[in-house]
Image (tube, rainbow, N blue to C red):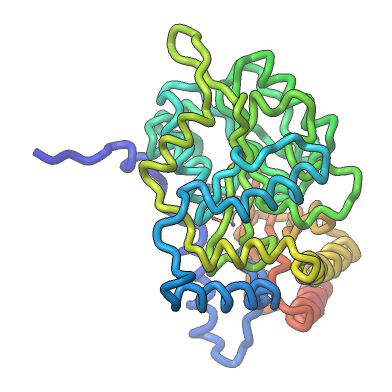
Length: 408
Ligand code: PLP
């Protein structure tokens, strides 16, 4: 008898975005004249940078001639891209990362899910609350979560991010082995300082734990003092894996390219306490189960590091940050406490009421869709997430409507 992985039965239905869609559809059916502005989902809206498009076209042409055609490439990514990543994204910021420590992939989401194959099912896992839901759900699938009771999984240690701790969770009281951190954060938009990050690295070193550091929104950092990578912290190489993505950095959500950094000296242990190289394990897993990202897409990602590419992604992100600044300024002016939006595309607003009630109010009175914070975890209750991914015109219009709705 073929049997299922019963851990899947413990998953909670992905209620958040389906419930949003249901409420928006119902409202739209009742008010067909109302134009809805979506500031909910975290997908980008602006076109790929011209430098990437030129590189894509050129690479597609290469694939059309026998003399320049490429078949299977290296699973870990082409050297032309791995070299640039190491140089521009890490060495330029004083982080000692080498090209052979970069694993190019088709998405940070896949890598974040897949990396867990390297770890035992009974490691103690610490996950932030509120959180990007992929961290929780992939641990549930892997059998690491325990039962779901009273809105939480029994075996997960929740790292609470609240206004009281400035949305930077405190170190766990009980020892944990696997730690998820995400900065700039989705959904809160909060950032972490170098010294706060250093505390986590010290914790991981002392407890022989591992940090999975999600830096998918790194490109939004404008404050020079903030770290872009966990490897800017001394001692992180042994205890951290970092995830990066071109999705938000360069508008690649539909094009697909990302990478994971696994330093050569990053280690985990067997049951006897012997150390093993996670680089070797991940290399084995990646080469066995992944065929690499397509050549044209890697050429497009490489173009991000040209002079024009750097300029173009900067203005792409500046445009979203301009939206974010306006949203933050307007919500502050209306008397709502908020965080994020300065070095991140998300603004996390304390709604002065239940998350879904605030969501409904903005939908029905302003025709604006946000994301109820409660959908990201218990600590998100009372908050909404507003995303800056839209045109400036739409954001201006949305904020005018929100102001009218909240001051009437
Ligand atoms: N990590 C975080 C925190 C995200 O918000 C997202 C996408 O929204 C991802 C990772 C996924 O990135 P990718 O598009 O590379 O899979």
